[in-house]
Every structure is written in C-alpha cells, then in structure tokens.
Length: 337
Image 1 (tube, rainbow, N blue to C red):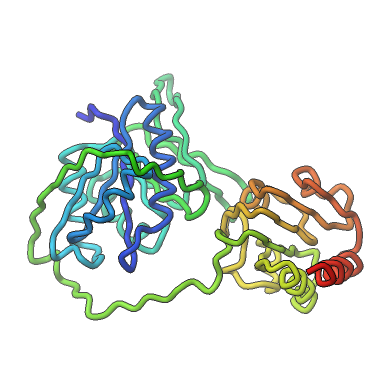
Image 2: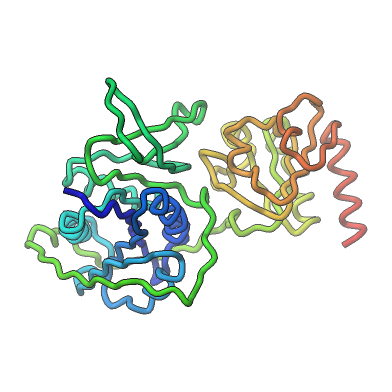
C-alpha cells in the first residue's frame, strides 16, 4: 500500500547537463506535494553524477533517490526501465513526472507498462483535485491537463485507481523555480540488479546538436500569424525582430501555412515563452496561441480586426494594416538604435 504519497520527478541529464524541464517539474512537484501533505522527491539515475545532487536539492527536491551504476552512464531504455521500476516498486510514489522529451517519451511508457498503470503524455498543466465516478469520490488525485484534438479542446485526464499516477509534461510550460542553494535533501542511494537482456542494445557513439532556436530564453519575440498572409510577408516580421534584436516566432496557423518553421511555433502545441516583450502581428488570439505567450511581461498586438481576441490580453494594441504599421515601426526602431 502506498503510504507516503510522495511526488517524484525523473531527473533527465543530457550531455552532462540537467534538462531544464526536470527543474521546471521540481517546482510543480513541490506545489503538488504541498497539496497532498507529502514530499517532493527526485529519481536520479546515472553514474557518479553526485555534483548534480546539490542543484536538484536547490530546486526543491526534499528526497533524492540516487541510482549510480557504470551501465547507467548513458541512457538506454531497458537498463533505465529496470533500475527505475525496482526503486518505484520499493517506495511506491503517488505521482511520477517526466519531461516530454525524447528520453521521457521513451522511458515513461516502458515504466507505466511494466507497472500496469496509466500515463498521460504531453501535459501542459497539473493540479490536485477530487473526482467522482459512479457515486464514488476519489480525493486528491492528479488532474493531468493537456490539449486534445489538435489543440482545439483542453482535456483533463485522471487515473483514479492505479499508482503511481504518471504524466509527461511539455518543456517550458512551467517556470523554473528560483534555486535556494541552502536547501539540503535526504539522499537515499539504491542498488539495482540487471539481467543480460537489459543490455541487448549498446551505445556505440553519441552526437549532440545544439538548438538553433531558443525561444524560451529570448527577451524579445516578434510573432506572426496567418494574418501575415504569406511566407514572403514574413520578411517584415524578420526585419522588425532584427531591428529590436529579437527572435521570430509564429502561431500554429502560420506554421501550418508554411510561413514559418515548426521550431518557431508558440502555443499549446509549440513552445511556451515568457519574454519581456512579445509583439503579435496578424495573430487573432486563439486560446491555443495565447496559452503559450500570455505570461509575457509586455504584449503589443497589431491587427486590422478590432474585435480580435488578442487585444483582450495585450497591454498595447494597434488596429491597422500590418503592411503599413510594421514598416513604420521598423523605421522608428532602426532610427533610435
């Protein structure tokens, strides 16, 4: 029986760095654990990465389950599944969270399948609440919230019966908590056993490629929507971004139309951003888009439709033809650089 109701986060490392989404999840796990009256814990698998433990504690983990083994130095599905499952079965967490990264999307389903529990992929929010079904109420279970049907609706999924409740969460939808390096965590070191089948796959070589676009860290973003009209018109968006020293982004409609690459998409099915300045050009303001940028410090909207929903969240609105407004802004900003 599960008695501790702890909320665990799988700590993913890549190229000897902790993935930022793992730190984001520690902040959310701490909130969920407070609602449950339990602890925020980290599942840290690798080989001799003790220097990372202080960072994990600083970002909110109260307990760190550390598994270190030479065969776990590089990620492989089967050894990591075996190691994780043994520790999960021993301590039985209430909730287990992964980043919706290639590794998280590979490992989490394997663990869920082995434990015969459910898994919700690509969540954008997590909450604790009650759920009633057939006159039976399940108290304080995990609401796993994610877009569905191409982002047209928001679904809340629950797993009332089986434990742990498992979810992968998209990168960037939750803020990284401020680290407190005075925090200390309880370190529980676990030894695990493998069988020969766990090593059926061998890693011969790893290559890492840095991201070419980092919208999450951009202080200024100029984004275009379907209203920009064409891929050629997006040159105006690029010129305005260049004049401001910002990055170019686009709505899902602009990406679907081929105006801007998918890696620059902002919204529920793209990247969540929190820049100091977000300029939305020709973007109507559908919830799928605003969910990914509404926390920007300042939002300027440019649209020729005065009823466009984007104006409801914009700090400043300009009603007009973008082909007239944007060139004037480019000239102004270049003149005052």
